[in-house]
Amino acid sequence: MRITDRRRRAARWLRGSGIEIGALHNPLVVPAGVAVRYVDRLTVSELRLHYAELADEALVEVDLIGDAEHLEAIPDGSQDFVIANHLVEHLEDPLRGLAEMTRVLRPGGILYIALPDPRLTFDRDRELTTVAHVVSEYRSGPAATREAHYADWVDHAEPLVERLGPPDAEKRATHLRELIAGSYSIHFHVWRSETFLEVVDAARREVGVGLELLEFSTSRPGEDDEFIFVFAKDTGELPPLPPRDPEVVRLEARLNEQAVVLEQCRAEQRTATFRLAARCQAAVRRAAPPGTARRRATIALARLVSPSAGDRSGLDR
Image (cartoon, rainbow, N blue to C red; front, side):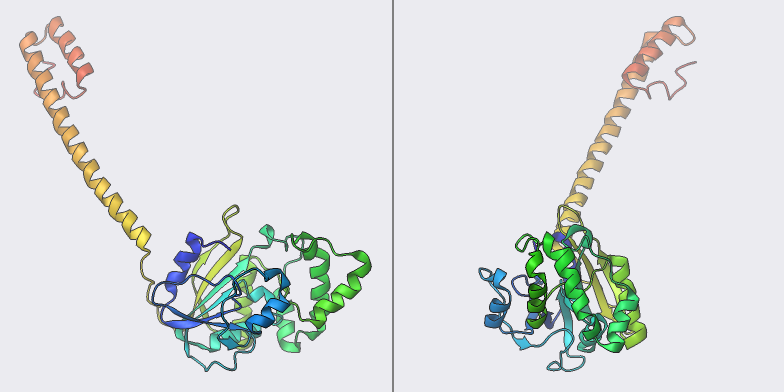
């Protein structure tokens, strides 16, 4: 995933110290002075075995073992922020994950979530996950739907993953069992931006998760394939605004400088126009007496040179 302007702007909300879960080889670039610890369910060596396709990638060092649904090693209200970058779609129980990530945030802490836009990824042929589905998984546990999720992945997503290609029909059952046995991390759920916000609302009702949406940015085909959400742990108070983007500040300063120069040019132009009009009026007065055909012709010629030349001093009389 490229470092986009949208990611950089959204990351301005991050302050202090926090965690990123499941960063692998794509940690979010955070502002200077922000401290991040990395959480994953496996050690780096185990991650390399689990994700053979990432063998040549530089993985971040894992500071804490855990996952978004089980952050028991992290105390309540201890983190200034939690980053879940292309993570929530991998959770079997998204509501429990949202509850855990919110639990470890201090009041007013920031939850940064990026989700893939299925229209622009290998999820494009899959059905969107309903709120009723994730609520059922929270209430009853995800075991009942696990195999169906993997089967849907194998049949509708894997054929579109460039490094995987279409599954071998004869080996499909074996491949499916291997994925389940190895707990391979697939996209269990598929959302659009509006349907994910419904999931967040369900988390508020079912689990008591209090999250306030601070910023949202939609996907941009050709630039990136993700939705970005920035939430604050709801405290009933307005959170402080993030620091202004230095690039925006510099651009505004340049625009202000250009506006000053433009206004100076306009002032000089107005002065020059006034002077030209005055000269034309003087020339008209010298050219002919008022009321004569020559006077009218001279005024018409003066107005071609300066439209305001005949606007003053009653030159038409």
